[in-house]
Image (tube, rainbow, N blue to C red; front, top):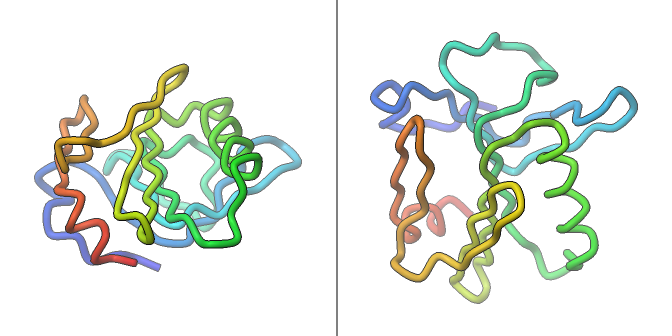
Amino acid sequence: MRLPFPREARWGIRVVTEQRVQVSPTRFRISDICATLASDPIRPILTQAPFLCIEILSKDDTVSQLNERIADYFRMGVRYVWVIDPLMQRAFLYTKGQMREVLDGRLRTSDPEIIVPLDEVLKLD
């Protein structure tokens, strides 16, 4: 499902929801939201790492399950993972080997530079 996201063209990305991602030859994940570079091929199942995966936590998610999903994404080559906790109104930004809480209210990436206010992301849930 395509997510209407007005800044896609400016950032050079494509945003999709509930996209099947093949993280290894025998394993698939479905990201709540992901962004690919606009130049990446469009396929029903992503076999090339998305630029960004966004996971929106539910009350049933465990830390172990989340860590496993994030590790799968990074092994595949995903550069950024944003984890959104709508219940606590908090977000965390992951890059390979690093995690930090978003304290300034802005989720970010670089190359391409994407800056999204956390409150916009919380509205998507």
